[in-house]
Image (cartoon, rainbow, N blue to C red; front, top):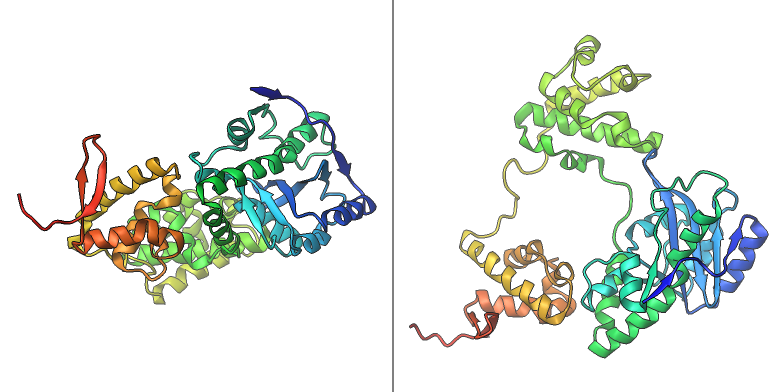
Length: 392
């Protein structure tokens, strides 16, 4: 096992001219590694604090506090493959900073799930795929502080230093298993995922206590949660800074109609009622009186047929075993929610499309249609077999 304690070489880019040189080099690269450091603890939208890019034998750290990152869009829109690890949040950050996301994405964490690893960290991926152990000591650093010291910069550079080598290794292993296209399809689905602004009318679903409310309190909580989401986005601050969850539930239960009644709500203090906020909260409460409650009261609208419910646990056990046998992460192969969606007949069920349909969806269909049966073999594993129809 090789221990990699420091990055051999990188360039810190803090000028427009230096960034232009990096962009010139990236335009013709068939693949390049990308990572971002960002903060969203004090904002609604993630704020890019550092951009790391590696290609060939080169590695650059671009300071977005000193350089306009937007011109990177030309590279992202180009034909090169952007290699990232756990790409979802990085894609959101790139979209906000550049107005676009890469035209081709390869997520090494996703790929690792198809070769026997389950959502590995970057350090775990490097160790498993490349035999390199990297030091990880600055994950919780303040990346918006300036200047960044040498240890912080070396840590950031390490996130992309070996990423292209891991990419090549993963491609070779995927090809040996015939799974490259599966990964490319999954990465394209990830790339196309909606990362737009969150729907304010759905914000209430992220407050667990609201799900227990009924009638008028539920409508008020939904209206106030939607107002909070809009206010947080408009002022670019975390939703909890606008109004804590406790206050939303308190408002819903007290149904205040005046400022004095609003001030008496538990969880609210003067900082939450500054400027126009108090009037806006009261307006949201008043609007709830004429608004029907959104979402299910107790169960999902499209509930699984009662006769199919026992099949879920059985099928889940078979899918879990299949994932072990095939060395594919269960979350990629098929979750319980995926199974239920298939059994409900949802048109967008993941198990009814692409490679999953043949590998998992069609066998499940045959099982629930009575064409196949599950049995234990002598090794104690579940086997999906053609049904004989003979009773014991």
